[in-house]
Amino acid sequence: MAHTDLRDFIRALEKNRELRRISFEVDPYLEITEFADRSVKNGGPAFLFEKPKGSDVPVLINAFANERRMELALEATPEEVAGRIAELIAMRKPEGMLGKLKMLPKLADLASIFPKTVSDGPCKENVQREGFSLDRLPILHCWPQDAGRFITLPMVFSRNPETGKRNCGCYRLQVFDGRTTGMHWQTHKQGAEHYRRMRATGGAKRMDVAVAIGADPATMYSAILPLPPDLDEMMIAGFLRGKPVEMVKCETSDLEVPANSEIVLEGYVELGELRNEGPFGDHTGFYSLADDYPVFHITCMTHRSKPMYATTIVGPPPMEDFYMGKAIERIFLPLMRLQLPEIRDICMPAEGIFHNLILVSIRKSYPGHARKVMHAIWGLGQAMFSKCIVVVDEDVDVQNVQEVAWKVLNNIDPERDIQFVMGPIDSLDHSSRLPNYGSKMGVDATRKWKEEGFARPWPDVIRMSSEVRANVDALWKKAGLG
Ligand SMILES: Cc1cc2nc3c(=O)[nH]c(=O)nc-3n(C[C@H](O)[C@H](O)[C@H](O)COP(=O)(O)O)c2cc1C
Ligand SMILES: [Mn+2]
Image 1 (cartoon, protein in one colour):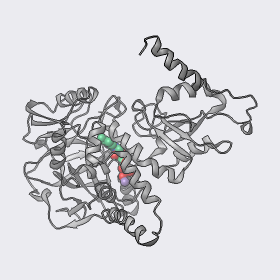
Image 2 (image 1 turned 90 degrees about the vertical axis):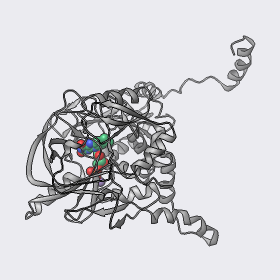
Image 3 (image 1 turned 180 degrees about the vertical axis):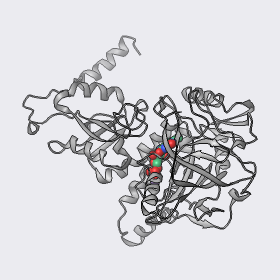
Image 4 (image 1 turned 60 degrees about the horizontal axis):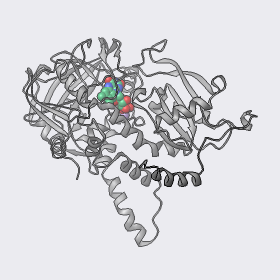
């Protein structure tokens, strides 16, 4: 059964002993970060801080911060979700009655993807067009050198002015004052693209934006998914939860937000207005530099009665976002393989902060195949940010980073096998020579073929014969070694 809202998810976390309520006062200024960071590093629980200092709104943090919680959020393992996607992709016209019957659950899957517009919802229990302030919310000041308080887990809704299609992205919002924040959509993201198109068409002075904070977990999670442009995150959320997302119209614009949202900030971005945002202790484990970003003006705040504030922190890995990203890696594999069926598996180790290091195993079929795969990944949506792509043969288990390091370092002739390309770089990268533009590296660590100009013999990996292994199993026991 799909989670009805954030509270339903909190109950599920509690029932599974994945959440701890903290009933005494803790300060959203740095202290909550220290709690969350320690917990994720030590295998601790998610937290519901019932008395954040200075606010009557409880704070939920680390709700997605391990594999079990991701599974509770999606009500399935990421592998199961990937399986459902793979089945949809493989769907054929059914044969006979039995085939049609077997098809029914898949069709139900499809029916649940379309969001449903409803006329009212819990997020409208309190509507405030005046007299509201962000100061009421327990927004974290995450790290010592942060420029201020940041809303870190929002669902930011906007519309493509050309196609009318909706987008929902998770872009942090730095609080400037009670009704104004930064709008940190990076230049490659869909919110930024809507903004650019809106400016280019001229005429309009403002772009409507709505921000929802806290909803059922599949809907929240959909905001971070690297989907193709114009593919509605709310459709994917419906697919994930197996039930349509209910959307309700905003008070002050035509945008819609999830009806079960805890808190909604309605407003606009003034086209052309920029303000310095950051620094902010970021995913990379470093502070991302201050830069100019658009400004979000809030004109109306709606919320449920007794709202809850959902947030996260990012910082030195692994953090909550690592577990969210790991599920993306699993869920998107069948979609990646639609274009690149030669890919067997991919792995993004925590230390690589997603895109800094992508390990890929392929079934190599022709000369230069590894390089073809690298270039395809660099051309695939947000995978363009992949700073270092390492391609190995299919017999290497990319989930075993030690095995990868051992085999790759043995297999490469660096000058021959490492390739540099120039292109777009993640906005958070502090090493690139220019913001958003720099170099990337591909490592072809596959076994080299004579068709690739490699004339020497290639050695086998050392393995003991199974016969001797079996013999020694018996001798091992005889020696009393267990
Ligand atoms: C906790 C968290 C915070 C994020 N903050 C930002 C951000 O401030 N700016 C940004 O552009 N992307 C941010 N992202 C990444 C985007 O949410 C992600 O790239 C998403 O796919 C963008 O959606 P879009 O393709 O619809 O623009 C964040 C992701 C997470 C998990
Ligand atoms: Mn999108």
